[in-house]
Image (cartoon, rainbow, N blue to C red; front, side, top):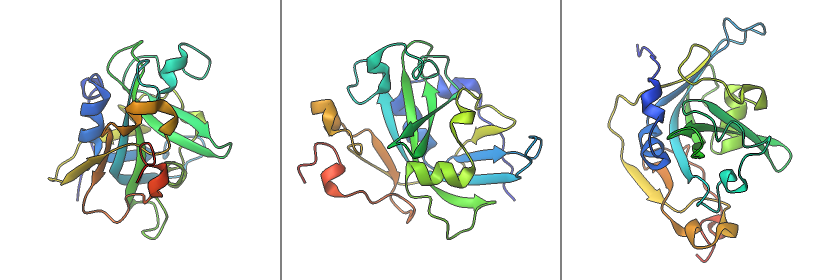
Length: 201
């Protein structure tokens, strides 16, 4: 049986590109046993991520500078940055690099491992956050345990890269290969080609 142990803060204190790649195959653990609402342990194996690289990245929220929304994003690494998109979906990110840089990695998809039905839809950022019970209430939470943490990858995984999803507004940077996927997972999202990169495909 796999024992889940949290990574240290140094794991997150790197460029979002490095963290995004290393998160593929890692496990995201949510342990609510000790929480007042006590919902048990839920685990996914992360199979898809996207890197967002600070103020110079036109697709990153950090481009707006310090606002109530970006306070966590511009804070210290190793914390959850959770925001609402389309008025209905909470998206879970990990803050990276160093305070003030605004680097983050979006967890786009995961494979159910524990506490989640194996047929649950986890192939998208809103779906995987919902399956894990993560919401904006978790914004700013430390990701080194005990309630929410990342456990490092233990098996080799074939990773493929490509442009991010839904960021055409960012211009040329939308074509950067900053999306990382487990090539062998059926839980990777399948967005329409018009939403990938600049949507030229």
